[in-house]
Image (tube, rainbow, N blue to C red; front, side, top):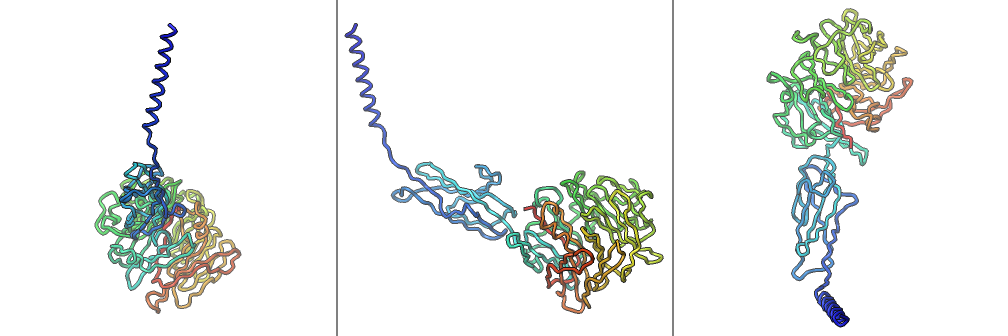
Length: 501
């Protein structure tokens, strides 16, 4: 028995020895090529203008160079979801050469390189910022030789400066046909998307030719951008608006369109379009009454003015399609003509009224949905001749213009003070700018306090228009000039193309 066990152990040992010897002879160790991507900026990333060409030319560092050269495949992709799955492939070349046709915004640019000999893949990511020279800024609609021209003060957050572009539609190659005299330019986000995408942001142009929008990123135009394509109902050919207004309710924007003594509401919560049903009626089916082209709204309730009855009317919800007279107990006056009305971020609404019999001018202050808090005759210098009005949102002063003169009226002291005298020039535009994102953007919040004044000399060349911004001090001190731009036509309207980022 011991002999058998001895032979068995010897046989096992021999077998193990032979096996080990055989395995050692089968391993063939060799170094493979290691690839590193170089000259690819992963720190600052890349910035390109929409419509321009982008070239990115990385180089590869190789640990081993094969005879006849190494073989690779390449892939460039945009990754919008910040994961490893490319969202859209841009190129399969070593060097990226593309014309930027994606909407302005921030993207993740991914570069993948695969060694075809080893199957090993390396990749690297960086940022791609697509922008335009017209990414954000003031749009200035002005009249030149009886026609509309859209200019822009393009704002750079990097330099905190404005660049002025005359006839920005021509600069951008827009196909919008020539427009007649200007009414208004209006920028608004129609649905919350975190800063205005091409699908949700609107830039409307209202002129005597018609009402259309332009593409919010490229400023291009298509026939389907006519306002009629955004309206529900039997909208007549040639329909056009003369004014727009809007406000935000929570994160939703509600818009008002004024046309032919009627007002139409685009309520985000109930419709993605403008129903062709005037809200200036007392009950469903009634004939609309003529309404003044002003709306005071907090984003939900709104106040308008019945021109026939010379009374304020209101509704308690944006989704209502009819209105009622403001209750007598809220102490709103009647019997006047409405010259101006707006609600600013102070929470107060202001209305300038004129008595048709005495020609006296009055100021009404109220909260939308609430009672009147101020109603007094205004006795400022030449105030009955005023053509433009604006109320300081933080100080409550009323500014009004008469020809080329600008006055400040103190509602408490009931006195006026001459602030500017433009001589032979005429003040054609007066406003404190409205920003939908004022609360979330400190820059916009500061600009909302600046008084914008547009003036024009009828005797000078067509481009004598001037736009100025003034800081408004307390205690009726003189205005302080903040900015001044020249070379405009007769300024009719200004609106800011906003961005959250």
